[in-house]
Length: 265
Image (cartoon, rainbow, N blue to C red):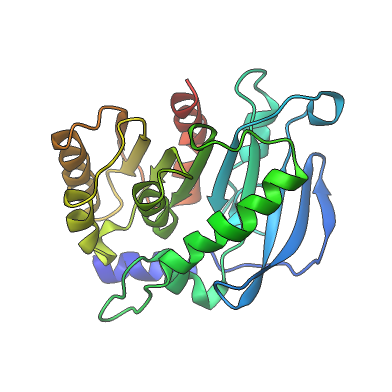
């Protein structure tokens, strides 16, 4: 089952368009930025709240992975998350969304904190430092953001869920909240020891979600992590198991709004 899940998460998000800079939809633009940490460039999608241009407010920021799947069905592998549709429909708790395109064949490398004996990877910390030290400063200078950790969320699914959780764990001074959907804890089981040996501020917020039909280990892996965090005294945790939920964009799209509302309320 883990081998099957690996191929799903390896191939499921590998569609990319190569525009350098453009307006994609109303309120959504793209730009490219160099990443010295990864020795590459990366395309970034930016969603701005509907009232951004007509206000002077500052906004929280959500950093999300696999940008190809967040806003556009054409660029997605198997359907979009519809993040912009959800946010366009709410009047409170609006945020700027920063979508980071995955690195195609480098996706496993960049979204795993540790190297797997069979599947490789292990450059997750460099990817997080790209967000923390290069991308986030650019975003905070360019847009009206609330830059403090309490207003900064890191959010993703599958390997994106894994790196989001690790990012909030290792860099709580930057990421105060994490949306952790269908996290691939199985590919980096070292993460449990990291949690055991890390001092986690109780101000950190974690929203976990997994589907019943994602694989034999997925539900127990999430429960093991939640139990470990609670044993350490972390109280701001929400954990959801979705009946009949599968490892796909449909699950993540249907539940993004609930997770977002919990993280910001």
